[in-house]
Image (cartoon, rainbow, N blue to C red):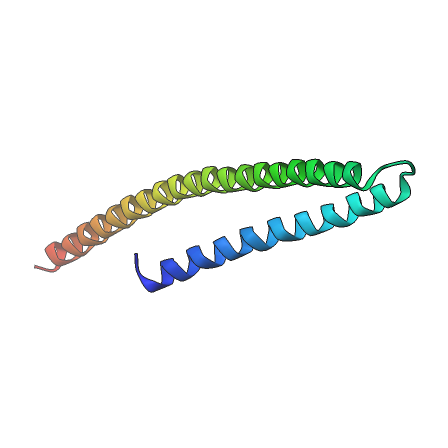
Length: 113
C-alpha cells in the first residue's frame, strides 16, 4: 500500500470515528435531557438508562456506518464494471476506425500507383 492509499484509508477511519463520536455525543445529550426531565429516578436508575441508551446508540451508529460502507463498495464495484465495459467499447471502436483509415489509405495509394 502506497502513501496515498494509506492516507485515504486513514482519512476514512478518522471520518468514521468522528461520525460515531458525534452520534454518541448527541445521544449523550438526548439521554441526559430525558433523565433530567424524568422524575422519581434514582441516580443509579439514571446511570442504567444512560448506559443502556448509549450502548444502543453506539450499536445503531455502527450498523449505519457498516451499511453505508457496504453500499459504497457495491456501487464502486458496479462503477468499475461500467468503466471496463466503456473502455472495451472505446478500444474496439478505435481499432475499427484505425482499420478503416488504413483501408482508405491503401485504396488511395493503390489508385495512384
